[in-house]
Image (cartoon, rainbow, N blue to C red; front, side, top):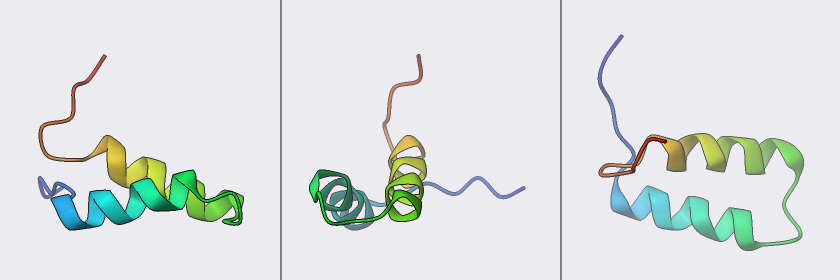
Length: 44
């Protein structure tokens, strides 16, 4: 599998999706997944 990371613009868009109360569950799941793959994200 390729080692792909979410770029800053996509991460910003994903963050907005998570903050918006009008988005659905599937959108929030995809946004959370994108943020978990963000460049420089810390893994716990």
